[in-house]
Image (cartoon, rainbow, N blue to C red; front, top):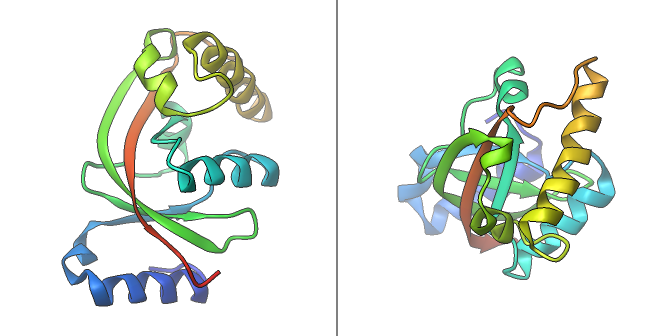
Length: 157
């Protein structure tokens, strides 16, 4: 693990109680692309509302990031990079944006949790990401739909 000392310390403390988790480490990351989103979405996870997240498959691949995997444990960071929680991936699907289901949209916990608001907000988000790379949004773009469960909250912060 090449993350910050606070991330490493949090993971090592978690492993003391859950040594079987050592081989399931996935990554440490924050939601969204700005501090406001990172903290808002993190709070939805911590309150038990958010159990899903979506990523642009091609962008993930271009950055050389591995796909999330069932059983994978990720450390969720706040906007300052501090580790706040650990989630476990329970399901991963790769589907075209236009085929994301209402059930998955609801799992994201955002806005009114409808498919319509999910599509609107994620089109805005993906467009912003793609424009930074000189690309355009395409409703056929592949999306990584990851479902997860909260397994630990960092009570040290």
